[in-house]
Length: 445
Image (cartoon, rainbow, N blue to C red; front, side):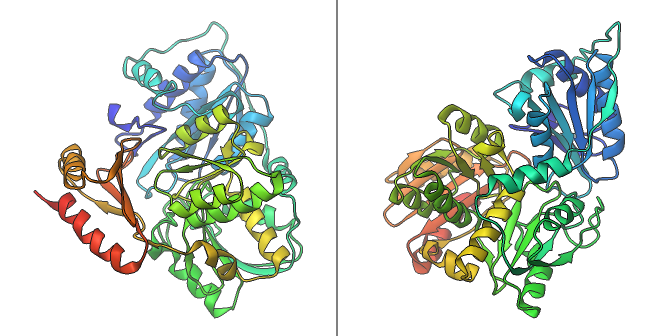
């Protein structure tokens, strides 16, 4: 059970790692420790195990004396909005996000959607769960249902300054939780023609894995965009908090370049401001922010870290290489719907193909994220530090090393037994050369 508590969520195989007993104890522990008084929100995704886990969560919370507001089956960003807008004490959503069907887990937050992560309360919850430190109140709490979806979509549209005009696009929901809510969102865009792929929620993922960072999951979307000459395509992950884009040619748009693209529009709208981005992002992101008079902050990977930095520095927008986009206007939480609505509004407003709008940001060569199964992960990181000791090094998250004309980051996954590499160079030739050099150190026995 202890192995399922990670840096910013709880996640593992379901079963044996994620069980209804764990859900009950986690809900009970959260109800005991939330600093704000009041009801606790719960929500879930579409996995077969999620309804039972959600019921166990609710019972654990209610047994501790707290009322429960059940948001139902919604995207994770909609859940965050519910916690903030309903003035709840905190909440838990049952989801394993982009992980395969055999996984499940929990994302947890306190009031105003403030995340509870490894450095902000999750370790204490882990101790309470492992010790079976449950509490039975004299008067159990009650449960009520609340449908927040329409209010959330109103909020998304209100936060994007320009309307969405005439477009023809495709969306792949990967049989995740996003499908029904995407339909609700696009009902508001009467000038958009929508081609749908895999909108039916099905936690067995019968068509492909719900992870748009894996290029093989984009194949059907790319084909549809090309075959029907659509203007762009959008792919969601399992819990609807990640969005990936392909342009009108069907070519994937790297999420860090989309961060730079969105940051440009946000900075122009606000006349400046601070943007946060994760340390795997292209140097183009930092250059773009500074060129427009903004301030950029590099942060380690993970929503709990990004959101804390945003709150601490009054950041207006943030982006991660994983396809998460964060907004001050959304309780400093991520919202894929706000990202796609803004992209659609820019493309329809400017009247240019997405590939042309992204082209100025495509000025380096990038490896994308490459995973390596490594026995001694810490040892390999130290070996990289020694092998490239002439470079400028940072240990913010794993190891980042910047050299003349290229740089890389290697970090340990928080959810899988692998090292993750991202490498960027000024051109393809240098990228290939340095990729071979870095891989040789990672793979050395």
